[in-house]
Image 1 (cartoon, one colour):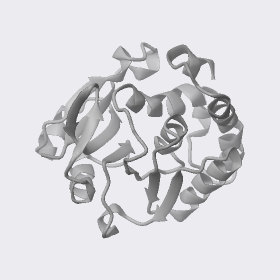
Image 2: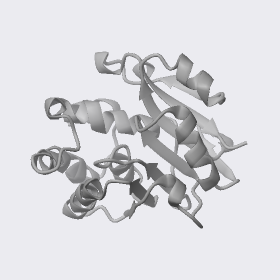
Image 3: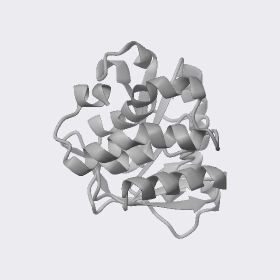
Image 4: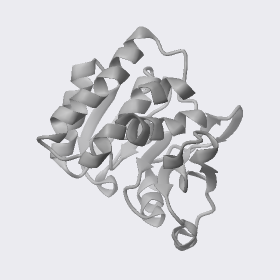
Length: 212
């Protein structure tokens, strides 16, 4: 938890309790359903929670918005973001139902009420629109954008005190030049190491593709 409070302050008692409960809950569930690399558990807050919360350093989410976590796996980045933005509804989507079981059980255990789950592939979703789609290391950028674009509302999102279009925000690592080229997109790219100057975040990036 110290790595979280190093970079964020102003959590209320409920948020502190929720964040503080996550590691042991995930450790327990991970022993039954593998949703996190076991070698990562000792660095859980840095590698999973803080990484997810990097999105909160650029995007301010409100209660009027609808957010989808595409390919949420065991709940990242959606669960930490839902704790950080308790008024914003999140739809956690994954094609593997047992991972959604972990999401639901952990949300219930910590009293997180602003998330719901959907067992589906993104391309199967109909009649739903979102202000923001978030994702972490799920698929190549070209696929993430192809799946996300039809699901985005055509209106505005408050980002860094400027109004920018709704879009896709994804967390990725490594050399992304070929992946970005193949996507045909021109995303905004932020180096997470510039926000959280920790060795783990070297060559980790946040990408934002607005809906034009």
